Length: 223
Image 1 (cartoon, rainbow, N blue to C red):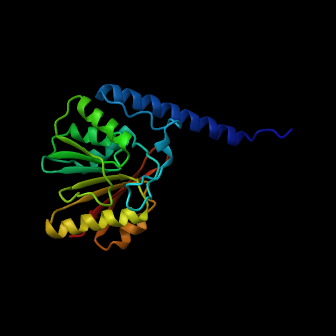
Image 2 (cartoon, rainbow, N blue to C red):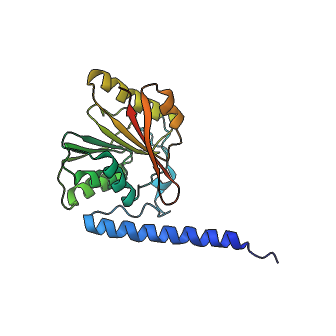
């Protein structure tokens, strides 16, 4: 009988331990904020598999993932949002990131999400959020067609494919022509980084990696 590979077993144990720690950490933070976003790892939820939504223009949605609380707070420390900032989470899921930003003194925090059940959860969380300091808006619509023209900070956790991403970036670029301003895009798990570079108007200005090696990249419009 073939003996199990020790390195493989160690790797499996480590992955299980990391998942368990993430669940506990998410649960503790959810309880503190009085919201419920921590079951993103539950395989029973169909939105985990990026089901195609008939309302989507390009039908290239990717399975929902929630950013870790620690990394969201690290993003906030780097960006240092102020009262003039409007935050957008494109593919906001249950609204974890929107809720964390809404506890800052910013103009508004907006979540864009096409999945109806996730929108309902995000709206419920927005209502229940403890110590909210800024208005929250959850819009159930396709990011490819959404009006995000007043945003100054955009957050995306690899939420959709190249076609939708090109539409999103084109919309932001057009809005900058009409309303010149400094804009920052935080793009997590940047599989479409080349699309950003090819845009001609974006430049990568910062990056960090989380505990498991996931990349958080920061992009700003060229001045």
